[in-house]
Length: 512
Image: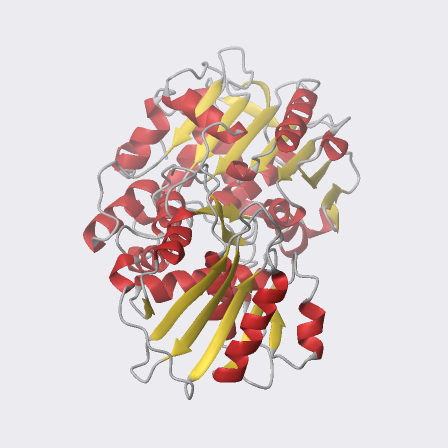
């Protein structure tokens, strides 16, 4: 296909805005690579697992652009940044690039009589997939692994955990976490970074620098960053995006970035769908279900929905709640000793506050909440006083469970030995990701009623979201104001869903 006028207009504009038009077949290896992939590649995890890959027109256009040639036949782009909304097929795309670079016709081998380029395999390819964790890096490598286990190339490679090794010739694709130790000494022909926005620490940046420097040891190498938007433009990926948006990329760097336009209303279904379409070529092409993605958008905190589905960068200290959501939950609270009640506790010693949130299910189905907070005031928090308060609540209310973060709580085993119904919910555990998501929903959906206490409301308002490999959590903002009622409320909401006899196993599908 060389008539690109039928491509989705927003996609075509983003692909060509910073780097010029899609090249003709005489100046790219894209046609050969696309044809090769259509013969050998198969889909990875999903409904089409193991089926032959059929590239959509916009995906073929990306390959034509990414493998564009200079007049001397060398690779035009040594660096590429590809940023699209979540659900747009970035991971399969990265897997197909890795597969082609490992065993496909990616090296210029002279010109045919008709002026088109010849292509051949690379000698001793070394494909390095890096991410913030092994789990994330495995997503791209799994696409490669599936092609070499389920497709026509199944007899041409050995696959191991973290490595796909060619048979009969030198060449491998492997995945590593972003650490200097793992990256040191590499001589990768291709370095692929998956979800680059998650490389946020100095350690990550040092590992990237080491791995990227290693590609300079190989001819016509490529470094490519795949990611949705992040929340901090001072990070490695953020600085690259800012450089691209300023127009500072060189002629040898590909900048392909799709995002929703500014000014859209995240509470309006029509605007939500418009933003998703602008950031996702699968939706713009009519392939992905925009209504399903609109539902996902509305189920997420706004900051996260904007980042993932509109591919917009958000402020690191943006509120975790929509404007006015907490205030709309203010109402009268009267706790009835006969009704089911749960506690959430976040303990401290001297720097933070300690918070105990009481949560009760009312007869109208609402969850009413209040928070008791202890401040250090220059001294140690009286943890014995906190423990006694918990005992008194258990003695006067129908407390079914107590969700407790065990950190900084040396007397917790004593309360457990006394028979209090304690469930340990560590701040860094997977259950807290689920708990924060559920807490967000009960607030935004108006299920929660709180008493409007100023200290309770201030701590809820002071928390900001932080994305992690496993989902989002809450942390202190730049002002470092105390937020201890937030994890305490989340802990109470979490245990409110427990059966009296047993603790639940939270399905991964419910943790967005």
